[in-house]
Image (cartoon, rainbow, N blue to C red; front, side):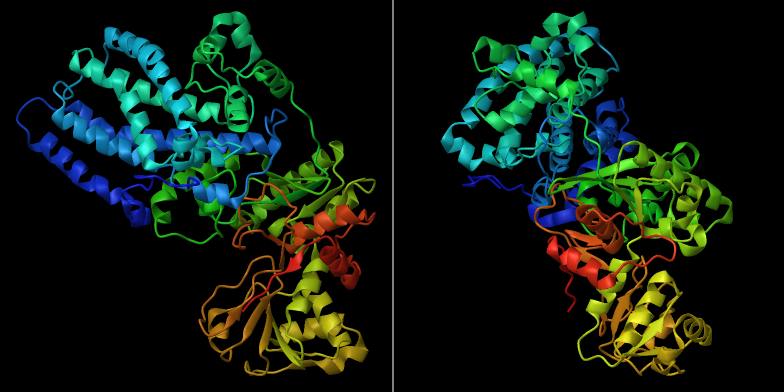
Length: 618
């Protein structure tokens, strides 16, 4: 929102939320009815409006994903600053201008003479569009933009756009409603002219709109992607096509580089920033920065790919949860899964910074269900091994194994890779020690007994031992779990282990994978479900308290955190992820994989000392 919002700042359909697209329904119905029932010549323009809107949405989303992928791995960053959740929230309505363009297009196609039945191509109309954009549109935009930087208009409208210092492609269309309407009037000049003069065509309309979207998105990327050879081949091009670094200076300096897409007007009117060329050269050269810590994760369900930082920005900024519209994305999800299965390689999905550490998150191109397939085990292990060796080659200090990348039956909690490569300098961390500490500190003080249920793991055995050492009784309802715990615990602690068929013997349940729905329903009211697994239990009871899987709140100093980690709340990070960072901050020279458990209290104290906080559940 602008610092002093002026009239017509809010979009008219703001209160409709995600139902705003229903506004298009009357136009679509009328268009289909007219096309199907009309006796005259069919109106082709009306029929391409919806495909064109879908293309605009896809085009913008491709730029969003590309930009986020590049800024996570590219050395050609322009601004080395952080994007936070408030910017993602502010830019969450980027599709409003697509909806508005649909309403305008349907309206104009009805009332403007000559808008119906446009031909596919007319060369003269395309030439007119280019000339009209390079002349009137660019000049009028330049002066309108300068006017918007006057303190009166800036504080009421344009400051909303400039709230984003570090820009993303979608920043280009984040404006108050009144300001967007001004831009729509400018961009309508070429389109209305060619339509009214009878030189319009489908190609000119669709091409001009695509050009605007392309240049808008490209210019707001936070990495330089325009190659130098392009200007070497055609030197005058630098006056007719801006670059991301050129426009980035407008967002940092504010009073320079006002142009729309053509810098020639900044040269003419003396508002070109003198550091434009130097920043362009520096951005192209880039700064190579190797990460200190890598967290290795993977997508979970088919739809989780949209919640990755590279996916849909608004979804990634919220904890992962199944949405009602997920079924509509099913075909796209299935195709993306097949492509990753066939051609995929480990990708960098996120880059952060904490103090002097550079952090990256890499994702294995496999989904959770594929980890359960025996035919995929060797393939996935080879992906993980390759990622570890690549991180070793880059000089990474620590790699933490997230989710199913650390399964005991899968790779012996990462020990498999250490066995194959015993001279690794990089430290492999599974985070089990910190997970144990988090679970132990989540149990309410004064608890005398807990119920332990779920598939037993390295973490659960360590938790059981620590509970016995504290004199807390462990109740099991499964004979198999009881026998396994009895074998693993020292004989002197056997008095703290009990087997029963009753589920109402403890108010705190420590649960792992394998907890059944009917077991949850047997829990007494007010039971705390505290998971020790990588995946949280399904929430079935409204009268019980559910903890997340072991996780901690990250310190304020951790930068560029604007996506949620799976189902965790904002600025909350899983134990295995935190453990890798703490391991590097402390400079510990040991691995934490296989059966290795570090000093739980030492790890917990180190995490707290570096600013990580316990996650409170009520």
